[in-house]
Length: 496
Image (cartoon, rainbow, N blue to C red; front, top):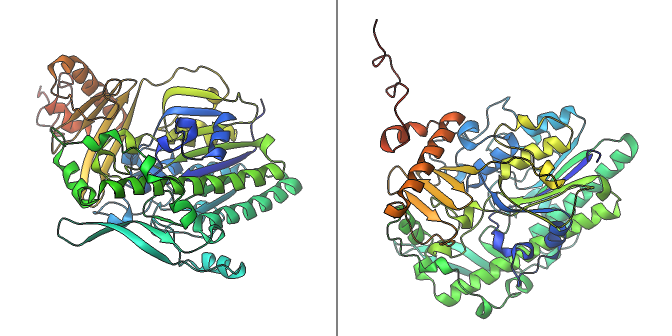
């Protein structure tokens, strides 16, 4: 098979894996993503390296885990971490530019405050921040050029903060037709750039990488009525993990539940919010479909690889939480992962433990470049070609804080998940018997050997990677005999 010259990359924000038909949802309409899955490979165990926007997106850009690139928090809630990658920091766009690629990024950037997507070689309007920037000049120009009404909302849905103040906006009715939504605008700008790249490819043979990054289905779910009311709340079952009691869990989870006002909302409202979220998913799916149809009409699909994923998931009431945060549950760490490569088999499913940084390595590989430049990822191209490569047996994820510093590390295997929380209780879940992660079995005597083996595996992984979190584990857990100077000084060295 020849190496694909072109790459279309779609990234959503806060997208639950269980909202897609190709992942088993029989209600939400996602025909375009389902068709993409049917034409390529669906990764059933696809994870984010960290469930927070900026660090995850920086990992995709650099091919590095967050502890390595050091963008550890969203700048809007930063607590003293770096806000931009260092000048000269490696990004996969460095290699693609040198290989003659045209580079475009339409949509959410959120990888720093000063260095924009253009600083990394991307064409497209600068769209900063975590939410749809509905006051952006280019969006306003789009509305004016197409005689479309401006942004206006009503029927806001909020809970109540612990201090009695109105909570964060969770959803609202948008008084615009679908053609005026920010999501439609992003697809329109992507199609325009796609046509430009196709013409350039025709004249010069230059390949392209075009990313479309949607801000949705991130909350608040601000949607036209047809999407806000697309799914019947009465037919929606609340997540099983709303039975969460937070017993034997880190106390921060209960605090986060209060911050996101879950217990101040009625059950009816919680169902309605899920229905609204599903409507947002369908809106985004439709816009992805528009871009894919444009690529098909331009005759590009036979030479174009297509990627789809999200920076992380969303709680939507699971564990009595909304948004994301310091809780390493599958709801926010497991994400969709779809890959189609020309000539590859269709309708494949892979159960291998894969993650977003693997997509970075795969982009490089499919461009004929060195995938090892994504130092914390491995190319998925062999799997997408139907091969059976030797693969990792476990996966590490990390979290550093949001609103406040909160370090966590996670190891997930085919069956188990271990989470180390230095300030609180650690967590161990059996994903086979407890897929909703309601029962923390870290202190379960029957799983002591499993727990200790996982602790040792996580310790070795962190130490080999150079993630200094391992120092905490050296003295606290049964990870093996001390074989280095834990004081990091000369005090413990033998004196001849």
